[in-house]
Length: 380
Image 1 (cartoon, rainbow, N blue to C red):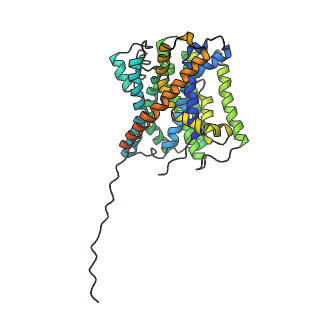
Image 2 (cartoon, one colour):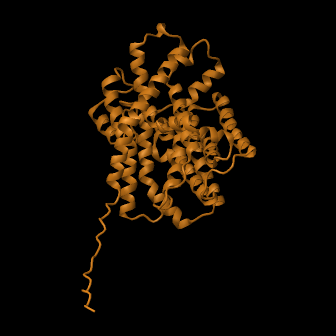
Image 3 (cartoon, rainbow, N blue to C red):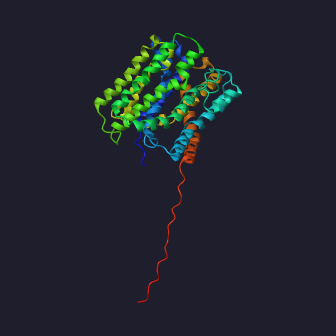
């Protein structure tokens, strides 16, 4: 089966989302005198990268696997799950060890049980906040991703039975958008552990973002021609710009929205629109995001996302705040995390991902040619 055309613009956007999360983890910058109130809002709302990743994951996985998992056999499931293991576990286990060694004051106490749940990437599943942000605190999002990975074959199999049109698939996103938003609106007045867990951490609750992306991904493959990128047009550039401005507008007004709603539900529709529009790759903005440098940064974005917190903590220990100003310090932090991500991506992540992915592929038997003895030529 020929591979699907690459969605390079979405790859480029991955680093933008990871960068947003990284800026959200730079509190020294948020409260610097050089940052205005609106600027602080944009920096602290960098966590919008998390719902973006969940929506993007659903979209890209539906795009990549909608045929292979429509009626999966054991071989297809094995190949799919091995590819997912290779995608997340090598870098996760590396950063788990690094966090254990190099984060001196973890957000939550690290216990043996937390280590086991963390290593298995199920530490966000139990309704117990004591395990969620242990060791490498950003890995809780990966735990939720693993839950999505487990569910995807069933969801795509059900979709194949349904075989809905792009319009019906798009309309089906409405309940997946509204249910989490309604839930977080109801839970927001309660500042309790259970409201935080069931509002923004529980994988079943976060499933809405993944399903929205998956449905839009399926609508995309049923409406787009085989060639994803066609000529760039001004009309599609305006669509892309409008989608980006929609996200900017929501961030600008975010101070009027409860924190729990901003964590899950408030941004979902806006980031889903960005994903759906940029996936077409018909505008100048998506053409730029698909170009060489943004695409490369997107390829190392997973390593960047997983490494940045450990790098920030270590630099905070070894670089005193008085040595550098707020913005040079932030530049150093981001640059060091990017460099570390590039090294890990090339020397560790990619080789192990390839090796583990190959383990899941069906072994091809060597072709044996039958050579039949030819009758001897009769003498003339």
